[in-house]
Image (cartoon, one colour):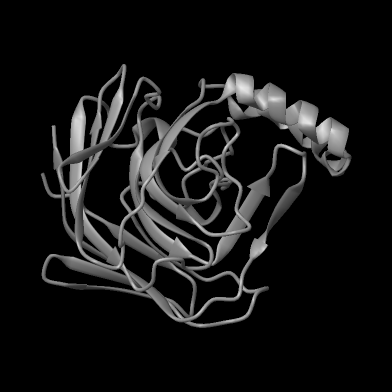
Length: 252
């Protein structure tokens, strides 16, 4: 099945296609400016109308310009949990929700993306996230807690509570990701399986709640919520970088 993708990029980034290959590029720059190149198939849709539900499999080939790029990049499925739109100007109304995802993900330092001990918080990994469907309006009071996250003991406690609500599983991948590799995600209602070059990387019972959308991206962003309660978010200096995606397909 062919997946119809739309590009999203900052003004200085580029996304273009040659044959079956997409190239996502962001230019060199200093921290303080967000740079993003992205492809997805969900942006005009409300979350409940995202296109993908289990059982299904996704396959692609990918490579990047360097092994430890500043920021994040990756590809897979998610529910765009942090998207925010009030529906103005013809945009689809979308408020923040808890995350659900199954993807291959690279995060440089100082990213810290795991809530659970024993799974990778940065580096290159295959990972799955499962959260309950809680309406955005019920999550809204959580905004009142935000100022208290600067207090380490409060932040640690909240992190522990969130860890009970959001299930995560992930496995680190150690390979030369500047070379072409084949990646696959096999998503079932009760499990998710990740393979690289046909070899099993992760099989987990942490299966995201559908529906989800396809996303492929590269940016210079970081986010960190450490076990000590330290919270950080921002952008990083980066050289000119690119991600290439080839032969993306879905098998239902």
